[in-house]
Image (cartoon, rainbow, N blue to C red; front, top):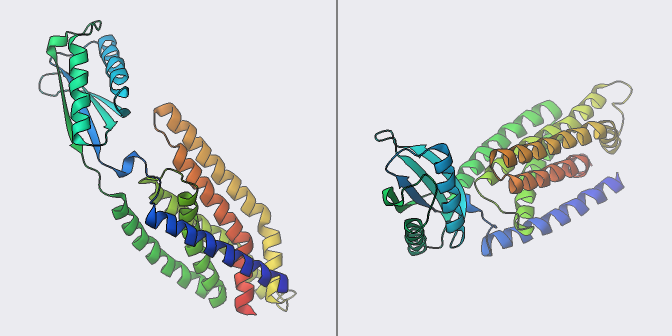
Length: 304
């Protein structure tokens, strides 16, 4: 039991230091935000006629190359006007200001007018720009925090009734710990974070709840069995961790593989999910360590 108490205090101190450091970085420097957290500028290239597929692709490639010289192109949306059938290309670009986006649009307009693009009549091309406003991502964070907070209360009540109060407190603390530590590590490691960070926080909470309750489900079984109910809390926690270690590790492996598969799928469909994938992998590692060390050792301390 003494070893488990030592493990608990080591985990607690290390976690508090990391969470405090992450909170400092997030508060004074901010997260390393991606393009989903800021307003996006749209540069629209419109042909008055419906272009052939080859001509449209040639125009898109030409515009992308030209825009990348002055600003970064994030995505390209291709559509047709419902009224006239005209080809419309919308380039979402990263620009520091409206003036910078306006200059990029004007530069593109000038370049197209003097360019020779197969199947495209430059005199029929118009170029304009406008700003696409994003809802600040911290708005989503607050909404998610309220949702996770309400879920934590329900989780605590369920765990306290099913596994006793000490286990309920341990599950509650583990859930809060895992979400906060995951966000802190994302800030410390400077992993680009945006709206997708909300999903990472929710994933961290759900995985933490599942793994912690897996451990305490075994503790409950030991407590109710005739031949093991006399065991001390430390022994029950140790047996539970030992018996569930394989399940916890396999769950972590499958979760990590799922993240990697999503990242690969995103690559092939044109979505950059690399940073979300890395943040989710951090959440997996944190939740596994918490369920194997923090939650069981805290249970022992509370029972002691």
